[in-house]
Length: 475
Image (cartoon, rainbow, N blue to C red; front, side):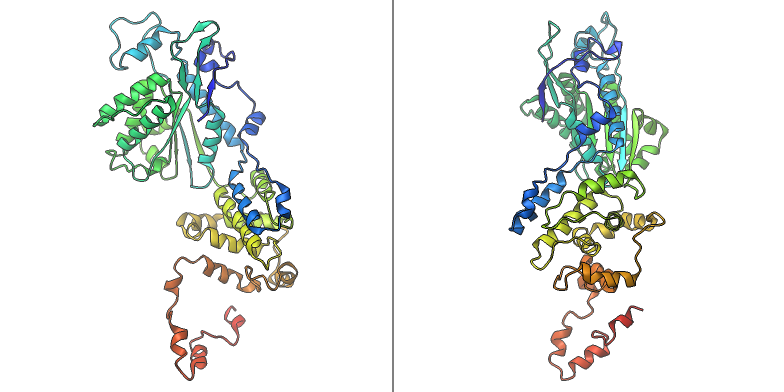
């Protein structure tokens, strides 16, 4: 949680000037400078690669998780969030009588006499971010939100003493699995109390009571934006249905002028699109769809280039088009899966005392089987795999004969982590990654049974357990 003292920068728009809550936000930056702020490149410590202890080098592979390679959609999402925050604060200037009315009266019960600057009129919109798990939505939000201060402390603004000294720029809550509106309310209250450094208080017994408590905290904290992640986890039956859920959330926007950011996996987008009113509100300040990177995109080349440089193998593995293609075919452009494959590949070759620590396509295949045993068989991955193809004219589409001839020069004979025959590779990888292996074995006690028989070997041949011509079976 980053708390900073306010530093004021004159706002660009005249209507924003003189508002300390807006002028205390970071000054506006261009796309290139912002993406630099959002990035995080791993400290490699190259001398570690020469360390003779494989356990030390294997430990360093954890750093792969630290890589943050921003894409242009980061910039677009940030601009939408930044604009929404400033828009919401534009109606909450702490020097305005309207703001005092907003703070001291319920929004739906204003005073009988209007302040000199008029009654408070909330102004806020909603941003929605949709994408499959692992494509980088949450990482992007973390980078954007961490760029913004969490809490700004005010004292004096251009010689004027401020009565309200704390401004909570953002709060992010994550829906737990099968959570209800009540649990969501409690998480919002807890996050606001934590940001304001307030002691815990008893929570109301009813939803209406919780809403009142949220209203009081949002007002006193001058919340800039509320981010709700993993929205697809909300159990709609517990919330009284999807309409009640969305109405509840948009009530926060309409009453209190707090922008919302929804972040979710499909099919939450279908929930939003069932009604025009809900869809219009959900995209009022921006709608962003995160998709896996495509092989043809420059973004994949940038990402895999940065990822591949982070290696602690004792030999440097050059990134070739063949390896880039293999990483894409396995990960399908999913950043999380790509991270896991590459880390497991390094761990395999570093910890194997017989390996020469070269990373080949065969190593990546087995790393994928080990690191993604469950996710590789999900319907979403299978559907995506059917639709993915490499660019035409790929220079690395070697024939089976070429692969067979090149294998001995790339793969040490004694290295048991790699398939020695390319023709068996796909079958071995499938078995390594199988989560239903016990179900595939017809008789787990087969070898114990035949050990007691005189003609055991003939029995194995008769049941095709032992083959005279295994290659012939593959034709």
